[in-house]
Amino acid sequence: MNPQHPEDDIDRAEWQAQELGLAHSRQAVDGRTDDPLVERYRYIADRLARPAPMGLPQSFVSDTSHLIATGQPALETATLRYEQRMRLGFLAMLGATAAGCCIVFGTRWIEAALPLLALAGQVPGWLVLVVACVGVSALLPHKT
Image 1 (cartoon, rainbow, N blue to C red):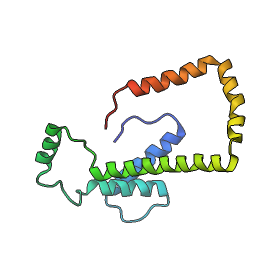
Image 2: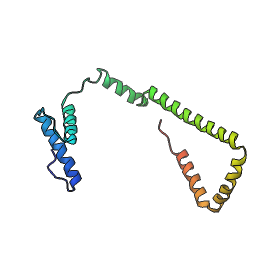
Image 3: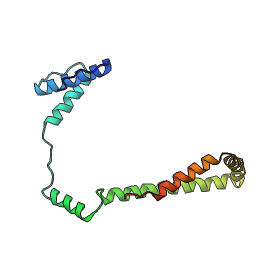
Image 4: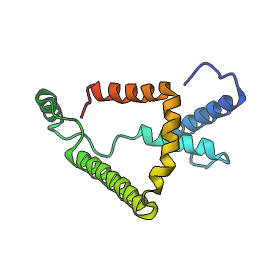
């Protein structure tokens, strides 16, 4: 329990709901309250009071120490494969969109972009900033 009372009314109502939910959970009050916030905190307190449905596997410590010793990534390869597929899918969509724009608009998109390039020449600070950001992010080490 938190002995310090919050200062504003929103936090006070939230704090009281948490305390009532915890008290109802500890006292095993069976009746439901009218306040859905108290009910939600009671449900959370009930779930946290129970032991986890399944424990860690017997080989958890040895598996974890082996992963650390070999320097393998903590993410599962399935997760990494999923992220790679998503990245490739987004790149394919970007390429298809660019190709579609070229097919639909032809060379007119280049003509529309030329005035923007002229404006970029008038503001060299932005161009330097973009080049600096790309350069810094390319030079920083990336964790995989």
